[in-house]
Image 1 (cartoon, helix red, strand yellow):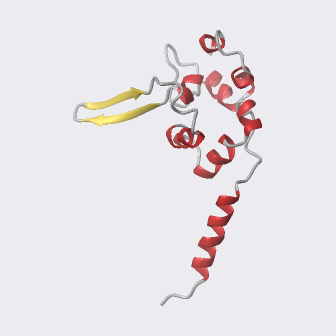
Image 2: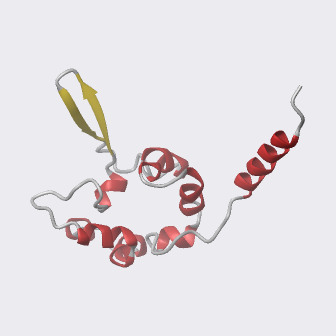
Image 3: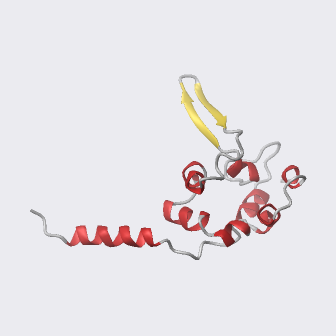
Length: 130
């Protein structure tokens, strides 16, 4: 975190300390490295993937720190959904104020797409079977 703030003094970065992610990181006191439940700047901006091999597992890190920034839905798939559901993730990542505040609270917006999908599924479920 301190290493990131040396260069990144924007609202999103500075608001990390007020976020639930920072709380999770602070609660994890494992040294020299935090556990997988700790969320740091690198968790989202340098996402990791576990690959199982014949001799165990390997962690691959995407060092392109802009890869998950745009388009935003790339972050949903690569990062957010590692811990959150799809609807929560999309409602969060497309809320500009919430992003700026570094996700300091649950999302308050509700994307119409998910309501439309639920309505379609309900209509399908209400149709008689043939």
